Image 1 (cartoon, one colour):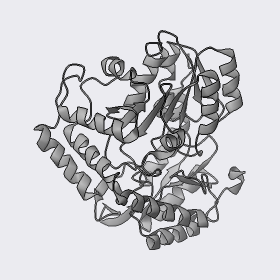
Image 2 (cartoon, rainbow, N blue to C red):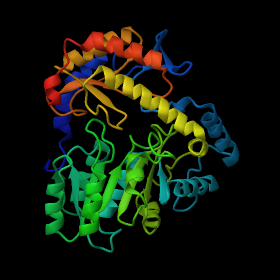
Image 3 (spheres, rainbow, N blue to C red):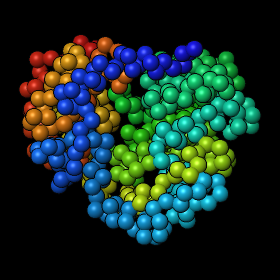
Image 4 (spheres, rainbow, N blue to C red):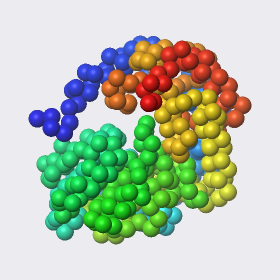
Length: 402
């Protein structure tokens, strides 16, 4: 029991901090959109400084019109039949467009978590690998959306947990076992990126399977928004699967799973999907509209604006992920309470930030997670950084960065 998961321990350790965050008005807030980049909260105009819409596309007019067009074309919001039997033509149009754009075989899901929950247990069973079950190695810092399926996968095959980005550990297992798969983030929430070149070396030498979630990396880098993993990998091969969120920088909703293996999709549709719960026609229409924007100069303009704001933040603070292509920065503070107090004061000044503690960051650490966006002006970004510095400078935990 609890060999691969201990949800009660996670809740017991983290819930007190969540309770304090809610009591102080930092969690479970209900807001309305105002003019970008502002939200309205209880009559106050605020800027959300922890939005995953890194390019500001969540309010793009063409994407919103695309959602309306999707409903118009389909004639309904959703065809409530399992896609193994029936699916709207628009869904096929979307997956063909995603496949062409990202140069692989794509399948869409209502979320990246749904994609992972559908793929990994099936993969662990050997159903996708000619009945040869791989040993699956999870990176220690793999996102919860992947970690939560460990117990299910462990009922199908052998599971191991790898120290973060420890390629020596991974190579040792590759030497000992005939078939090995590595599960990790491409761009981590708080701890940099996965070492793609090292993974490709292990794949070439040992036939390593790769399952990489690059939800935070998609759209923010690459000439066509390929993101960190797809840009670095080059051509997708039949032993690599990449998951990407369409609900972050991409600006719409849901997620996609893409691979160079064209044999996966049929079995995934039959046995590894949430059946009748696929993207609805509004989400499909919006995603098609965002794909169109990814093929225009606007993408480069937004990526440039995002990088400038990231550089402004990096010029003010020594923080996790500083001077990297990760869209997330964490200013480490001395305790959960310091993080909550700092976020409370910043909200009074019109900036919503995310106070983070275990399990978002390792036990014993806390801080403010900040994600600059392209739709925030450089003047506003600098003003925020000044406010952040004033609020946090007495409680910054520089020792935790060592």
